[in-house]
Length: 202
Image 1 (cartoon, rainbow, N blue to C red):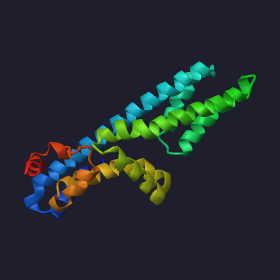
Image 2: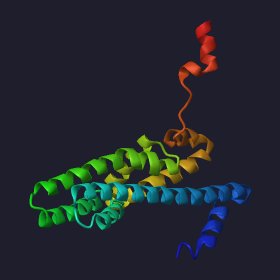
Image 3: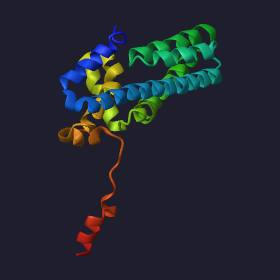
Image 4: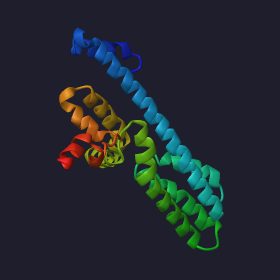
């Protein structure tokens, strides 16, 4: 229904902010569309990387159906917390049933914990969040905050909503400092500031 009524919604925002801001509103809406597309591309990269890591790890451990479990685990990984638990439980059950030692199930658990650590601390902040130009710190805080507020659905929408907020902040002069705080552009080191250099020389 949102897609069907898209022209109505766009016209609503144009009227809400007045004719004088029509071009600026259109620019922001187009940038939001691009931002969401980039975020979805980032999620796709995450799924591919996680599926590869899961599959390689399970193949090394000799777990049957490694490819299917790897792909399914990567898709379930999109659901915070609960998805990773379900993803890890399936190969653990297969390891218990098909392997002579229960140690294989523990190795599978260790594999999934390590990959989750890599995903949460590198892939999501550096790859997914970078597609929407949000720094790693802001993305981690956003996921934790939205998760505390709205649970799993909040975690799923945390990064795109934060990215949309940053985009809007960047276009409103009193809020541009907040947009800069959420962004991934690092300021120049203090030592390279020409004004500070002159002050030091004096």
